[in-house]
Length: 382
Image (cartoon, one colour):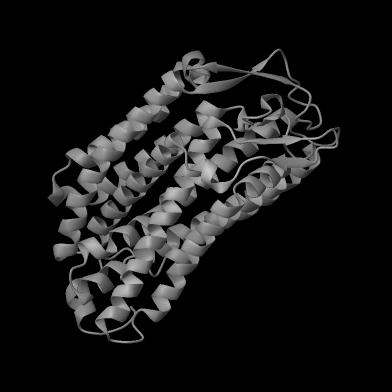
């Protein structure tokens, strides 16, 4: 379209990268909140230790929800067909995620209202269950992207979905869910080792090392499964990168190992899984006494590398269809208009740096460690 200074195909690539960045941002920032919640009953043995564990994330967790909202908003505005198909197909899964996330603020507010052991134990395990369910469902959803989701369109692009929630709980989807749980629990462990002190920090450090090793192994096994046991998707023939979005105007084939094509064509992209593996192994190999800044940075790189690996493998697909492969949604045929993408890009260039600056400022202000001695002096919130 004339008047827009950035070509349509470049805008589509930019918004694919931005969507990935938002997902990684959410996984890195809210990921350690979810991981901390999962570890809460295991690293905190006394009431004071559990309050110490919670108080490492209480000042920041609400701000981290921004990345989740931005991801949903970006998919709605930049990839409307993706938004419609994914939120319809994953409706029950999304509902479970929202329930799991809702438990967190309720638990933070109500946990210390009463002094009884059972009352506080209930909310502690509620936080852990919420972190586990959300992490598991996120991973299951990513796993099913690589398998394909049973949806299609009619000639007027009206969506139909042929699956159900239990269909998402297939073996590979569950493996991806387990990987997500291990990855985010590892991330939460390195965060606690960085922010807490005393016994909680030591237990979290030891847990992070074990979880990192398990995450690296499961990630490698999942990669082997994708390369050898799962039919990937590939566009056959040519498809216009600048035409108006129409997911019905292409041909798609499925073949074993097709998800490895991008890594074989562009060898430098192997850096993504390499960073994922190396980051996790570095966390696993560090002595517990050093599981602080370096370990948290390594964990952050592992999370980013693992998620980037999935996105690179899928490209240019956003949501493959298992029942109608030719109707799969790709970067080139499911975006908003060129004008819309450009206007959104301008808005993002203005507001995203503000969000990043605010996040960095809050983390800097709250950079100190939460010490058990300080927590034990009071019975309530920070």
